[in-house]
Amino acid sequence: MNQLSQKTGSPLGVWVFPPKRANLSRTTGYQEYLYEILKQAGIWYEKLNGEDFPSALEHIRILVTAGDEEIPDKVASSLRAWVNNGGCWISIGGVCGQHDLFGVKADPPSWKGWGSGIGNLGEGYLTVEDKDHPAVAGLKRPLHYFNGVPVLPDGCRVVAKSLDVHQQPTDRALITEHTTGTGRAVLIAPDLTGTIVRIQQGTAITRDGIPAPDGSAALSDGALKSDDGIVLDWIFDRQPVPGAPGLQGFLDPAADQWREILLRTIFDAGVKTRTPLMLLWYWPRNLPAVGHISHDTDSNEREKALRLLEVLAEAKIHSTWMHIAPGYTPDIMQCIEQAGHESGFHYDAMTEGTRFCEEEFLEQLQQIEKALGGRRPRSNKNHYLRWEGDTEFYQWCSRHGITLDQSKGSSKTGEIGYQFGTCHPYYPVGPDGYLFNVLEMITPTQDLEVFAPKAIMEPILQVVTRHYGVAHFLFHPSHILTEGVDQALLEAVNRGRQLGLEWWTAEQISRWQYSRRKITWTSRDDNEVNISCPEKMQDASLLFLLPENSKVSVDEKDPARETIKRWGFTFQTTVLQLEPERSHRIKVD
Ligand SMILES: [Zn+2]
Image (tube, rainbow, N blue to C red; front, side, top):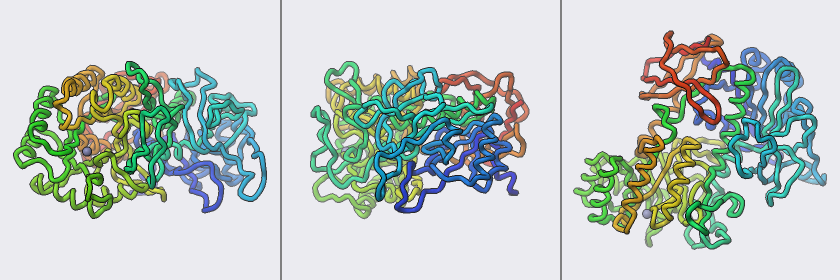
């Protein structure tokens, strides 16, 4: 492959600055996670580095940078000329010394001294100032952030401002837009990548978390679980659950909202610069979201498993059974598999005599593998959502064939919803920036009618259709005979179908999301790109954001197209059959 064909040719360029060396202050973290954020969104982009400048600017119309870096004068002057000539620079967490280009000025520190005198946003909330701006459309409540560059407006349009961590107003601007010449410079001042990672993964777990002050989520229980590491706020980040007086939940996925601010800013730039943008939609057949039902088989009771199988047959879905050692008797295991359900693993580090360590994890996993006739499960949820440490657990999953985990989630009713900020399955990242090949798909609630009132069902389904993720409901076989639980499962499935969801197993979800990350875009020409995937992807949906009067062809044919609204923008969409060894040529005229 020559060098030219390795370039994707996208008019959307992405330049991530390397992390600063140890002991230097920084306004962003995990900048490289930006690539995963964009891959998750499926968007066609080109990865750039400093050496690509200024020549890269010849075919780039929109540039996204992450981090605050002193860029060389030569690069800075070419960037300024490019913006003046119609380009759009979207900068995250820094302005690279180009304050005037962004129409902002630095907010100076209150004190200069050893290790101080370096501006930082610290922790706070975004509040919308300009409700008409597409970047923040749909944001109804203040949005939590961590870290970023502190600036004051100095000629820019202020799209969003900062509230401090106690939600007191400040003068600081958080999202700004500045027109210069025929182009624009947009600043997203908070550390978008670091905020997403911090909310999704929480902090390392070494002790109990802080309980909710209303008594609805007693994290101080002497058992280390994933929720002990949550970083969102009990007061500001929860809201009342309609129909359940007194109960609050995390009903807005904060990390997804940050992702969408970036995507909407990019799409807005596409519209304003008349730049065609393309992406592979999250799900096949343009599904708005998918649903998933998991079961943790605590205590392996035969009669209850048989009843649950009847309920699932009535619901006409396939689900994922997380088997706790030693597993059901072979005949029940067979019934589950023959009915088409997936068998996963329920690692137990809670029961007396068990430990939270890789050796124990593998021992129990092998027991379940044996009970399944030698086939290793590929998905897992930890019993009681047990967790210790930071991301070490993902290494165990990765080393032993687990491709999807569900152990981040709610172990107490008062934390239902999105305390980890996302309804999307995501690839977690290690402290050194290493991306694990294990999808995390959070567990936002447990059994409806037992763990949480059925009132939470509708808010969860509304969140996932609004943010296009996965509606995950956990039903334990051990509760299936409790009055109302079987009906709640059927209602959730039917209501999800009404909203356009298909119900998938964990393995279907992880396979699809893994394949999506394998997509390649290659281009030799400004208006033409080839898309291919080494994995088969049936009914993959492509979205095109096109300038007025442009049209798109696929393999030199006018594809069957329809118009669809996503993130508040209007896209043309078509469905493709992606197969290994076959690429599709997309051309925009
Ligand atoms: Zn369990």
